[in-house]
Amino acid sequence: MTGSDHPEPPVPPPGDIPPAAAAPPAAGDGPPRRGPFGRWLDRHHHPANFWIHMLGIPLTIAAIPLAATGRGLWAILLFVLGYALQFTGHAIEGNRSGEELLLRRLLGKDNKPRD
Image (tube, rainbow, N blue to C red; front, top):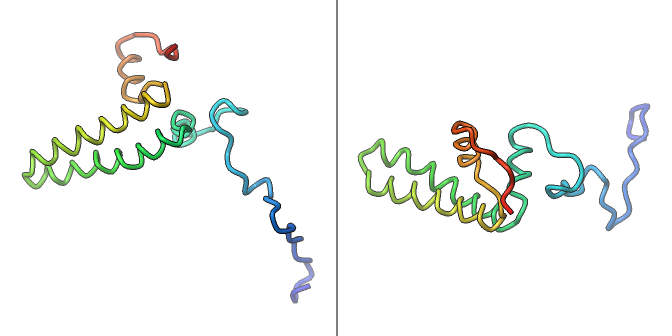
């Protein structure tokens, strides 16, 4: 005991990973994740898609301050490059991007998974 009336929790043996620390299941393994970030992870579980997005999203966001400071050509270049990377990631994953899903929903098209 450590000066309180409550015993310390047991320490797992080396090499054992407690269930709470285990990696989350990949998409399709178990129930879908909840919340916007959980749904995002479900559509980006392929490692290449995930890491391509980790590069493409900041490039796309970096275009905003460039456009605001009059560096239009650089802003367009980064924006297009960032989105091209993200669409490439979805091609690798074999699913549609969130933007495509939204446009299809607004246009009344089906959002069935790609074959």
